[in-house]
Length: 323
Image (tube, rainbow, N blue to C red; front, top):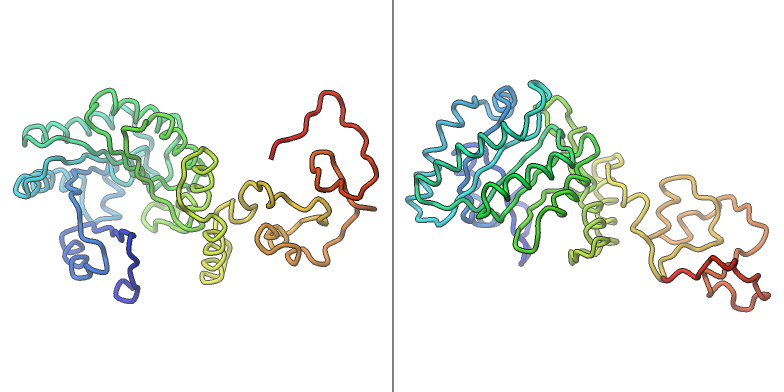
């Protein structure tokens, strides 16, 4: 797969390697994969069961490897490192929920090793393959990190959305962090993802990229992404995999503005295909039943009043909506 695609300028192509062999294999495909950057980080799976299922290692073996990672960072002369909780930071389907205190204790152990090596810790990573994240817990966790280690300003959240709250958790993170921080997020087209080792399979989906981009834009965070083109990519992906994907904005469309406000006289819209009118136009609902006896006109849509009888005045307590 990697050998068959053509990289585009300005895009960084990353990979996940769970062991030294994986790192070596990735190096053989660099390029087209992007060269590794300073990502020296000690990580821990809080669930010993999951790491055995996912990595064929134990938690104890993972801890033993911390010194090797830090030694390599020292040899490379890097100025900063990172600490992280991999795959099950908030809870496990086999061992249950993990507390803020547990997370902070393990992060502190890792931080101390970096301190002893004389390398500053600038990055922190939280991964949640089993979809245990909750917005209030993500908020409390990031607040605790910022209070305990003000030098950490690079936050990476890998939140699966199998229980439907990952986007809310991202919102919680955005409210905690400020302009001096970097927030890294992972998402996928249509939420397409899964984990065969966590017991949820394809239900362990990711945040849909189109839903994330839509929320960020509505919050005033410019992404540079053409959301309508992205949605068409989602539809193409659905054709390729042969089933609907899991995002919402790809089905209902972005919030309509200006000339993308819906046609007031459109017929009843019932199916997902008919709802695609926000890109396909009226052909999406051609032939659908329309119960309206005449054109719908409204003072809130002045363009509908052209060449129309004088409308009734709006109630005193109603104002025209700004578009």
